[in-house]
Structures are given as structure tokens and as C-alpha cells.
Length: 213
Image (tube, rainbow, N blue to C red; front, top):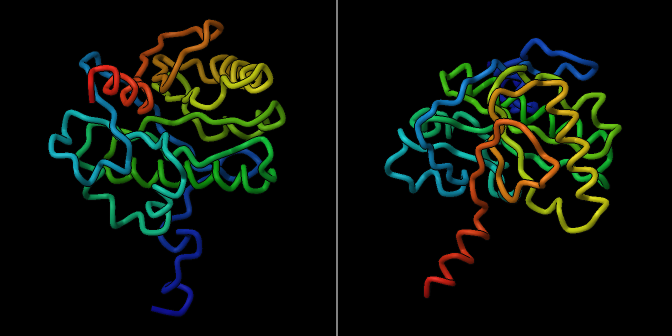
């Protein structure tokens, strides 16, 4: 093994997937969502989970809690293969991030998704965007007529951020025609489609407090 092959190089020594769009984003295959109920847990709780076959994994948590999946994906493949579904990592794409970082995070999300699919995992694409300029690339590699996932957490704090979220959501629906949309957090009235809502952690925490936790 030569020096180059001993290094990570952004996982390119593992796989270089055929890319789409201007930035060679790995293409994900569509996944259909079953009718049976499925509880989704955060990646940070996946290692402690016992009943994995009936659960899904989401990444709607702080990036630092799952960057280790990007740094060492092979360490987590056997565990993630045991879950019913795994969403693609929700690497942040804040509007004040440089565009290069936003595109890099979109690429990383899709590389992990393609790698998971190669290992036989049912991968639910997490759709992310920043502002309208991101529509030029943020849907590259996303499958059409598939189940997808979105999160509204942190996007409803003011009129501007809510407007950006709703516009991006509508652009996603128009371009990808998702058959099911798994929605993490509160669903704005403007958002339409076949929505399956899962509660955010803060909602569960507040409910537990109200029950005397």
C-alpha cells in the first residue's frame, strides 16, 4: 500500500462515485417508505439502541455529534446496517456559510448516502438548502419520487428564516416530487404533501417535564 492509499483524502481512496451536476454529487437511489410505524432516533443514540430492526436513524443533531461517521465510515457500517432506515447526515448549510462549505457539506451527505446504499442500507435522503441561490446545486443527486426527510427546527424563529424554509420546501416538492416527506419538527401551514411528522427532541423533553419528569 502506497502513501496515498494510507491516507483518508476525504474518503476518495475508498470510493469515487459517478457524480451529477456541476460538482459531481453522488446520485442516491429512491427508497419507498413502508406503511408500518417506524420510530426514528438520533445517530448519537444509535449505539445504545437495542431494537434496531424496527427503528430508523436521523441526523437532526449538532454536526459535531456525527462528523465521526464521515471521518471513519467503516466503523459504523455494521451498526447502521441493523436499522430499518438511515437518513443521510444533515451537515449544516447555514446561509452565512461560504458557498464552498455548503457545497462540500452537500457532497459529504451524498457520499455517505451512496456508501450506505452500497452496504444495503435503506437510505432516506435528507433534503437541505440555504437560500435561493443554493437551488442550483442543493437538489443534485437527490432521487425523484422517493421518500425524503426535512427538518424545520430552527427555521421558524423569524419571518425571513421561515420564508427561506418554505421557498426551499416548495422548490424541493416541485423538483423531486417526493412520495412521502418525513418532517422533523413543526410543520408550517404552507407546507403540503404526503407528510409523516416525527417529533423533535425538544418536544419530547417538554412533554416529559409536563408529565412530572
